[in-house]
Every structure is written in structure tokens, then in C-alpha cells.
Amino acid sequence: MSGHSKWSTIKRQKGVADARRGQAFTKAANVITIAARAGGSNPETNFKLRLLVEAARGINMPKENIERAIARGVGDVKEGIQLTEVAYEGFGPEGVGILVESVTDNRLRTAQEVRSVFERNGGRLSGTGSVAHLFLPIGEITIRSKDNLDLDQLLAAAAEADADDFESDDGEATIYCQPGNLERVKEALTAKGLEIVDTKISRRPVSTIKIDDEQKVTAVLSLVNKLDDLSDVQRVYANFDVPDEILQKASV
Image (cartoon, rainbow, N blue to C red; front, side, top):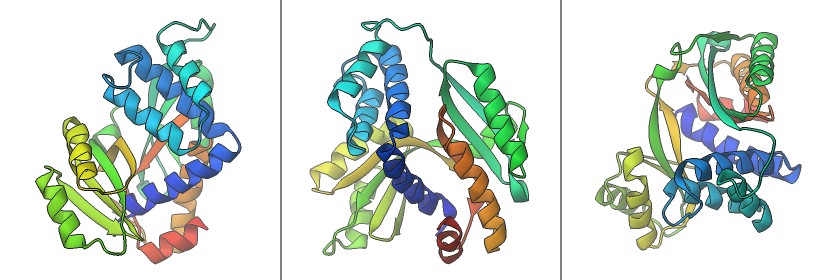
């Protein structure tokens, strides 16, 4: 099992913990605002917005917060800030490529914060295009495996739904597909009675750096976690590949 799927699970668990202290609500509201501004306020016709609203509900974000974020995106709520999506690229310990996606109302502040975290944790911020090519956009659907769910049957269902790849670990299965097929694949899997835990457009590394030393993995995770903790940062992608037992120990 590569580090990608396992790290996605760790990030999802971390998101629930962040929600308990309110940070995840702010991050969720910002991307909902961006999606509503780009594609309209109706989740039924704006698939990206629908995914983000579902994710916000998954962390128990209050309905009024979601509605306020949508209203802000379409201009029904006037505020003195302008949110912008910005990506930062850099390298961490062991040469791991790191892509940081953010939503900010102050590019200078966010850039300084991201740079500081890189430099204080054994990494360095690099130029545009230096890392982005290491990750490809991909549709990602996480399913909670049930005791009576045969993995071969799940794989067959994924293939029938036009998915591209499949991973299974710790009671969950992750199905990958082309971003443009995400809505159709999700609907096909839901129609088969499968329990969808998470659906999103993510990024998957095209190549990975294998790390099998716990201390080195801890250094990478420390950098990634601190980037992820920044208030303007939405997602952090890193192209490391780590054995499960080492990743679990290092992430505790």
C-alpha cells in the first residue's frame, strides 16, 4: 500500500479533529464560496459545490454556515474581502515534492506563512511548475467496506462504473476515476448500495519517493502537517511512498 491512500485517510481523520476546534469550518466555507462564485449557488447544477457541501456536512458544519458561504460566493452577502485560489510548490525532506493548495484574501501573508513553514522544517519553497507536474488531477471516492462486501465484487462494481483504479485498506476502499467521470461513477456506486464516505477531486502522484525510515517519515509528516494547519491552506499533496507500519508509527 502506498502512502497516498493511507495519508488520505489520516488527513480525513485530521479534518474531523480540526472541525472540533472550528478551523475546518472556515476552510470549508472558503472553498464553498469559491465554488458558488464560479458555478452558481445551486448544488443540483453545480457538482463541485455539491461535493463541497457534502464534505462540509460530513464534518458537521452548521447549515447556516454553509448557506452563508454560498450567499457570499454569489454576492448576496457583501464583505470587504476577495478570496483567491493560490497554489504553492516546494520540496521537503528526502526531496519529497509538495503541492499546497490555498484560498486566501492576502497573497503576501499566505506566501510568507507557507515559505516560513517550509524553511523551518527542512524544506524549501520553489517556483511555479517545479512540482505541479508530479501530480495529476483525479476523482477519488472512498467507500466504507462492510463485513459482507467481497473485494472482488467491489472491484467489479468499480470497473462497471468506469473507474480506473482501486485500493483497499483498514475497512475502507478508495476508487479512482477521471475527474470528468466522478459524478457518474459516484452515482453508479451509490446505486449498488455502497456507503460513500468521501467524494472529491484530488491529486495523485505520478511517481513517488520511497521512505522506509521512521525518523525521515516523521520529518516529512511534520512539514506536511504544519502546512496543513495554516489557516489559508486547503490541501497538501506529497509524493512519498511509505510502508503502512512505518507511516502509522510516524503519524501517531
